[in-house]
Image (cartoon, rainbow, N blue to C red; front, side, top):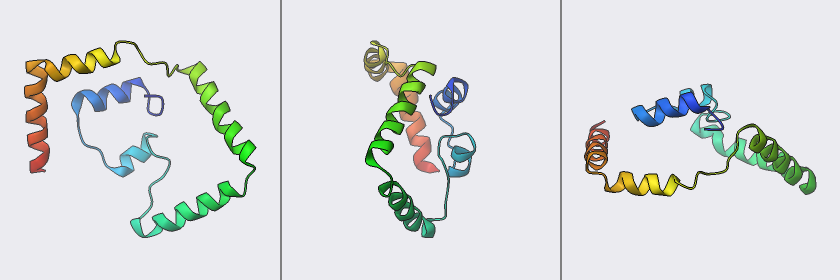
Length: 108
């Protein structure tokens, strides 16, 4: 939800509609999409660039960005998250709809 916002999250979760890598990139769910044959090279060059940086700078930058994001949009989880999941797993209507959804995904 932090990456793509509450409206887009609700749309994707509630509709369960599939989306491809390009859409995931467009909506901010992914940083970038590259052809498969370029992936290893990109990963290696990114890793080399990060290793060349001070580990202190990398670590504190990550921590700082996360701290700022926590202030903007708290990542504290609701104490009821697990309860909601457990209920959905035992709710007959939710289970039926989930099975139907998964059966339809196998056909595509």
